Length: 270
Image (cartoon, rainbow, N blue to C red):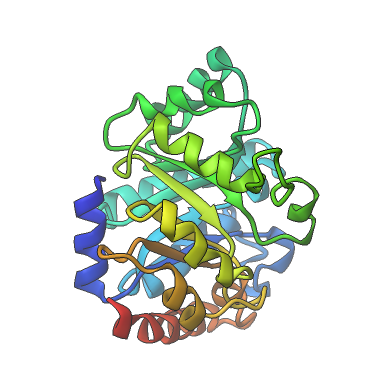
């Protein structure tokens, strides 16, 4: 999926919603506990009720890896279902990988060739070696961690360098030279909306993946106010606030309603 295709889908749906598939088996509805593939059945139901509002899905790989082989099987089943039924929707592997070049190239092959993800989140701490192998794949995206929404992000991301700039700015500006707006996004948390405007000054064209809306306290209004660009430039992620909004047999219907509510908040900005 390229930049223009993503923007066209945003305009068509009047939404820039990314639904996080943080499908924790411990939180699945009781009605799914006895089925053979509960994570997959949960994801499938959520996807069917939210697809008309979502322009991206973001499986958090930790919840699948923790289940061993069974988790990987259900992740692959989820990807297959999305590719066969909603191929226009971007699928992001929330993997946060970051390693030296030869290892990074194997991760890139795993996510882009074997599993056919459209994008993957990456930790840039080891420098360009950890990102460039992913940028070799045309039509695929590297989503680089920049200014995240967790409290301990202050431990490193906002440290002041000798130049006076914060570390996260150095990361963004350097990573912009590795790729382009067509294959690189940056993670910027919704809980730091005032920083979005600042980052837009030196990163005007790239898409931002923005976690933290909903359960973590961020709002669509603030993110849009500070983060929009001429091509929207935002993918706002909501996970728990959508997929675990209800634990009854109506969990998917309620998820769809929550996705619709967020999409309606986004519509005036598209």
